[in-house]
Image (tube, rainbow, N blue to C red):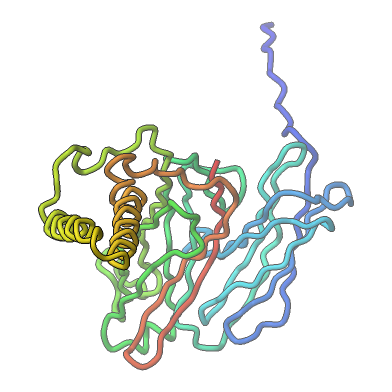
Length: 324
């Protein structure tokens, strides 16, 4: 008989957790939600949770929130008309395992045009709905615009939705490819035959670019030198000659002597102040170094907006940007 050694299955590191999702009273398109995370009956007081909606068999993140000292988080999401299967996902942190809540079914009867969600963050982060970058690094994520069934059926022509970001730190930029996504009233060619238009929502890739501090100061456009300025001489030379004449005539007229002295002091003051003007500083010192994108944690809002020429349709979602 040959004995086979069977390795023991490794158990997950950390304490198992339980995530609970509770839906509040639906108000139009806005669904308030409350998430609670516990471990052995004790609240988990740190970490983040993501709210996901199942679409076409795949989870799409609608929002994220940070757990408070009571182990709970409150968040509201915009939902398109129709049925939704919402879940809350707690991302694993040190000492605690990840967990997903049971699905909460929500039906929205109000026409809400479309909803927006973000997913597929790169570089990936252990925290839900979070993009972590080092100053000078870029990252990306996918934005999905999901139209409702009623909205696509009422369209008589394609509608363009413009994507944008707000809440970025100084020295960071956001770009979407494509910047305008198209909601069709008919089934897109990329959709399986027979699928409704809303089954293949348009997506866009958004890139967040941060910047590192420059190590070398930029050089002035032209190096400082001793070249004279003909325009300056056109003003200063006649004045200097005039002052010379005033000084010469001061021997006969005392009041003229005082006037020439005042004019001379004014000329010297004018010439001295030119050393403090911005052009002088730029030519002799050059522009300052470019600063880095400030480190910190930022809540960035992604907005999807369209307009029919009279009414603007707008829906938003958020994610967390961490700059190190």
